[in-house]
Image 1 (tube, rainbow, N blue to C red):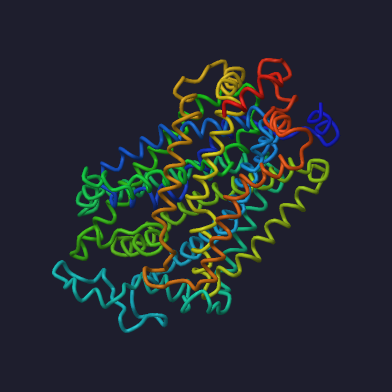
Image 2 (cartoon, rainbow, N blue to C red; image 1 turned 120 degrees about the horizontal axis):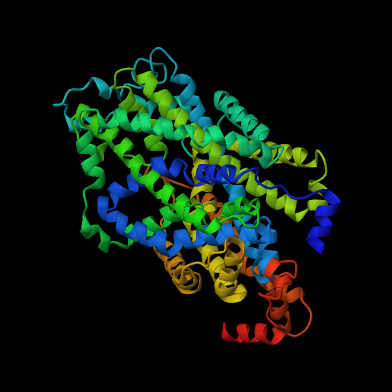
Length: 578
């Protein structure tokens, strides 16, 4: 067998030392920054408790089915993102390559967030928090320390002012220039933070999962302790109930807005890390008989519950800040970097012992982000290793390749820690890692399994691995519901497309939008073009080429046993049905 020959020559492929390492690593991957700074904001913005209706619907029709699908594909094939599709359905190999490209884009931008987090963590140990006052060299005449305002502060005057926390973020940390055309100089402090983050990530994964699998015992569990501390502190603050009520108060009218459903779907794909292939890589390190079926249920439940609970911790603090400033919660609620680097630091500065709460918060963010970065990097490295096993599985070759990958990403990231770096960061994030790319990949991913490899064959594979046949709902999702919902969401994204703006006022130049669309299309077009290319280079008639490209690898367990192998005539009949 081809795969066995490779393993004999270069050594067997790694596996998790224990099931606990797999569960903790997946937990660290799916429970990330999006649970803390994205879900709560989307929930309040899109109808409070009513937002849970489209969210849970997307979880049931897309989140859980694709999570199980990707994990079981990895476990069944014991291969990375690209080679698993080459074994399962060669025609859909472009799906794996597109997922790998999206992961590379993720690798480029994700660690920049951790560099910002580390920068804030270092300053959190200061005797006087620098974002709590306006007497610093970077502050302007418009700076206002909102923590000193009373309840009767004039809200109108705040429109022409900026908070000390905002000026620290924009003028001290980023030193924002006038646009992407004005690159400016490299922020050397951020460069040191970025270099430190890369060093940690490198030495945690350079030897493979036998090292990173041990690290997650701390990095995946400690953030929950920090979240618990922040939750207890948040709900005991004055004004916390107003913030929580604002977070959850249902507004059913919002369900009529297609934007609400689109954002619910995007959040599910983002939070569950589906459509990127990382779950496939993590599942590929499992033993063949691991019960990935039940694992998927519990991990998806944990992810959803963490997002929901994090909302209480976040909005209780925002409710406290709103009461201190004498404004509504809507005026202080932020999403993404605005929540992590402006809203929460500003709120913590108003509490007793502000250094303690900012340290807890940024340690939590740092560990949540490092877990996800581990998985992103492992997904990329493992996929290249499986593509070139003879070379990259040699002693010390993996370490060299990981170092080369880290240095390449670091050099690209230098453009994102300049004075114009935030514009580059948002461009890659908005286009290269956008929900549209992931949704498009998910459509073909589910179609390839549901109709080409066969949803019934996938059920047989899961039953062979876990001794449990999946619920019939999964077969219906893989064949019908998941591709239809994903395609509808993708079309809605395209129809509702709005050009990227920075801070709601800066419009990028035309060449930047062209570059952004080039990144988006690089993964979107890779799926169909790779399949068309495979058909073109094949031999025989078109039907014969399709029959070969739709046939699973003979090395797959059930194919070897004859349980999952169509005859040529059956394969052609399947193609005709499609």
